Image (tube, rainbow, N blue to C red; front, side, top):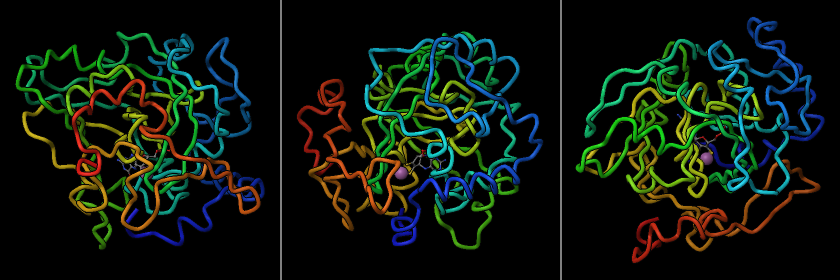
Length: 335
Ligand SMILES: Nc1nc2c(c(=O)[nH]1)N[C@H]1C(S)=C(S)[C@@H](COP(=O)(O)O)O[C@H]1N2
Ligand SMILES: [Mo]
């Protein structure tokens, strides 16, 4: 977001031609190709314009029946056209794997996401280390079709599979001092090449946070899957946040720690460029980024000849649901 300007904005558009070329490179780079390749989508009754010859990710054994039983939550499903699966899994921001949009899909294929555990700490009565299965298996998985608006002014419409964040957080019984929740991504320079880079892109590990009422809002979601299958590593497997009314950088990937705090957490992009990236980061067409406008966005897929530029909506179109969380706040100050 800071470093790559022209290169990310000008040529990362995915045209059918580049998808085709990339797909071949991508399949070649897949490890254990057979294991990683399943066809179709796991959800009975949910159907997508799904490109079946693209790789999908089976996820852990224990999650498969649960995935197959995913229910679409129509209260949280936009009717907008879905961004095709190939775009969703090859146009990514996951700086741990490189700064290019296609770096994560190329470099994250060997990323080990099973077994996985998450530490829960801070202002809660139940803390400790939990396996992903402990966290996810008691819940009914649901599908939410959300808009994702990156602060770089591109956007997608993505069918996520997961659980409401509040349902998980409540199980830890947060104390009255829990005013915020902090999330941390894995720190593992052996697997995540950019974390070992000489140029310190960000202060690793990647950290994000929400105010507790934001975290408990019914739209806040923890994804374990996308397009009816387990999350690909490049999309933040095995567990990532999805906060659809905020810029994409709030939706932290590959979470290993959840901490309830009294103080506002220090978050990675805010630390690296406080004038450009605020803690709240609510999508707001009337507050421009210091270096570009936020009034419009490029809805993927987009190309040179059909750029597909649309207006950006306040709170990314979720104002009716979430604007009241910020009543009385000056959103130009608290950007
Ligand atoms: N750990 C981590 N989480 C991250 C990022 C990152 O670089 N590292 N990028 C963020 C940004 S800027 C965006 S737009 C979304 C992109 O999610 P996607 O690649 O699944 O579309 O992930 C967010 N989560
Ligand atoms: Mo982003």
